[in-house]
Length: 451
Image 1 (cartoon, rainbow, N blue to C red):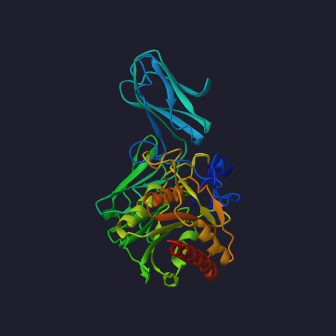
Image 2: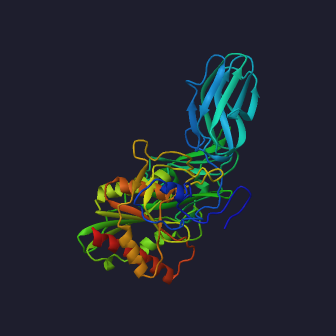
Image 3: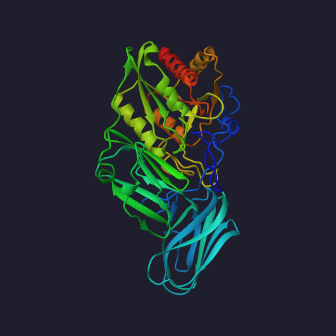
């Protein structure tokens, strides 16, 4: 495992304890008794944020200056305070004459301030930093001269590596963008395990970052239908799976009902072990399922990309049942509820996915409801797992990370769908794979029998 100051180690994959089960249950009637949170211990800590390909820090929350500013200055609430750790507020502004003072405030308390002298007529990014506990903030700009402000943005102060656009169907004419901190370099890039670092062009360096942009066909002319790309910069890594076409609708078995099951690729990006959900899905034998055919899909550990891949597969392949699996804490967790929220803000700097995306207090779909309840027969699945000798637990906190994204998307398609967390595991011998393959098969069979 890797370790250094500012870089912390994952203890698990797919969730973040964002809302305590007791508070979630307050006011809910006729709900099943829940076990102590089986997903405790999913995260220990992780690296601070990244930057995007549009000039904004990747995890920035951007607030327009319109409505906040007059000729005398600016004042009002700005987003981004839900992130914790070392944050920066940057004002995109011109100070034509005089001086100005930029302040970040919590209520009446000044958290950070910066005095600004005349910068001329060019647009300038003026940053000010502070340590955040995740509290709401306001911005204040007091000026003695003339000025213009376009927007304010709040983002984590530190970042390591990000790759765009992420995993999925990528054409040769599409571009791969790699971003690292200013003056840091990409140490290694591999295609299916083969080092091709020397193909990378020189990057462009800005105030915050160095950006390398290259056409996929130029960088990876020999790639196959599925290409695994790993990028390393210092102690940071990203993992991408680039496809030439969408996964085939390959159902195995002889039954009438169609079942789509999903697991995840290894995580973190440079993990030396498999993901228990991916291992379990691969190990499961469709021939042992009565009355159904099964399609397997291994998803990237990426916020929008994972959810998009599973909803695309549902639309193309028309399964009757969708059961997604992820890696959780110490127990098998039968998830009851998915939340319309992406948020790892209570971990300092946030928790990046496999390509460097961090989300803090961001809705999955602003037009969708706040929660979606599972459509799986959890009681029947519990009984089937107990019959195997397992001890499944019930959970209403799948985290607000990639697993929650996928669960929310699965249920939103209207299928019989839901999510199950499997215990965090780093060693997979034949016995471990057989065990988790049986867990997946039992969940499928119990659902097929109830439908």
